Image (cartoon, rainbow, N blue to C red; front, side):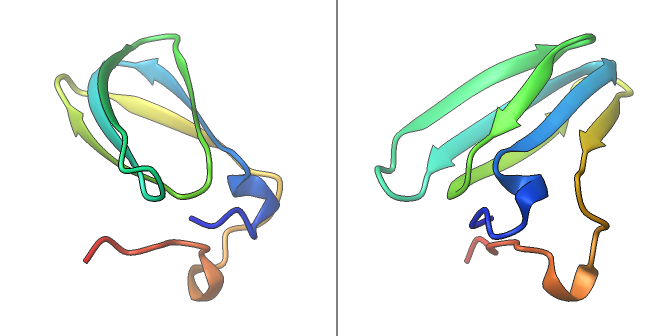
Length: 80
């Protein structure tokens, strides 16, 4: 995401339950990181950070949003 949508500057997630493995790559610097989220943790993802998640257990995420989601203008960058 580019951050054009105020709800994605940064993207904010809260892991209600479960365990999730995350991989992130800064699209500008190419720096990468991997980490595990567990129940009760919050995740902030800044613009231009590619990210993917793998649930290690059944998991429930909450995404905080300030704006209504518009699938026609989702502020999403696709990984090619």
